Length: 336
Figure 1 (tube, rainbow, N blue to C red):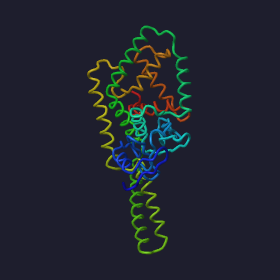
Figure 2: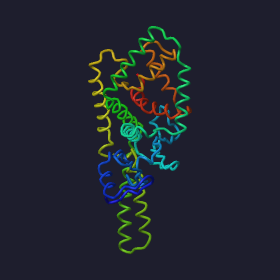
Figure 3: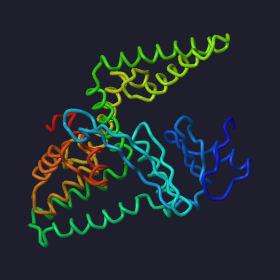
Figure 4: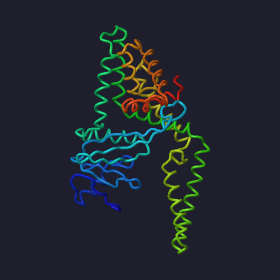
């Protein structure tokens, strides 16, 4: 290992075990899920620290929202973090570039280590309160058409969950498409130009330092590093994986895969472009609360609710997770 991970908590692993576990860990963004330990990033280095699982008490997502987070004018301006609580109260917060990677890591932990809680203590209280509120809003008796609609939607959820990767890719590709549409082309080329200037400044500054030209070269080097780090991590920078052809092609392939899968399910409750379990569950809640009786009415309620979520609306973490998962799919299609 070039950089040996530093232990944050729990028992220390011997060098051989640590090296093998880190090498074989499942890498998700800047972190990793190994057999023996969870690997976490520093600000600059991926998988710089490790914590053995018995020391971990909670692992959950934290999202910092900027102004205009739920507006229909742009993509959700958010900074995702993975928060790890360990050793009875210590906490490590890891920054991620893509929120979907945090979700993937949490899903991996759910499968590999179900004993680790994946919500904060405050989140547990909010979830319990939300369940009570939902139970209170449910109508005690549903009409026969409403009961039929709920059964059909539940069957559709089960069908989608047989291949969850299709819904996940549909959502994630929609997010990237929305982000690309809402990023002005001029911003991407300005970011590229600044990154190139930063690289030139880095090389020039390093050359000045090596030639003994004084501390002035250090400032050039630092400026170059800052520009490179800042824009290499920004989604506006045009790269081989962040350009119109790649982004739109990914969205088209995700939709085509979902359409192919739904061909064996005649009369699926929603169009393929909205085929996600979160959409169907929100439709079920709309019916159970007496806001709709039919599938079409329930989908209209979901659209209305999503449209109403703008920058002035405050939501909890669970609602946020649902909204950022499916709202880009509706925004890209103008809610048609």
